[in-house]
Image 1 (cartoon, helix red, strand yellow):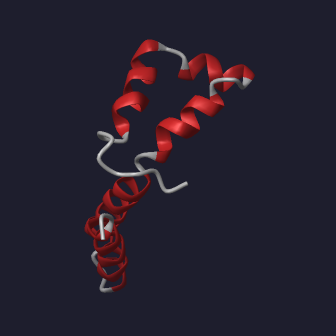
Image 2: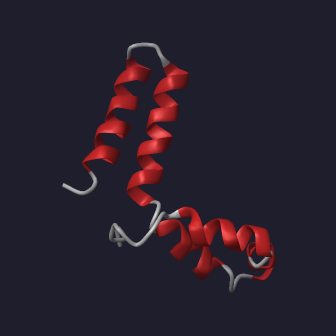
Length: 80
């Protein structure tokens, strides 16, 4: 129930792409993906910080702050 907005947005975007509104449909799909998996992106960024080249980029203060605030609050649980 707590992810119904993301599910509707994603599949609504698929429907919009199929009825030939690709730009608006892809924006809806992107919103749905971010809403559904937004809590996972900081977890993935944290695990990638140990890799040699990507880790240096992800440890930059601006990028680290972006991923820290990317998933929204702790109001939703992570999908993993």
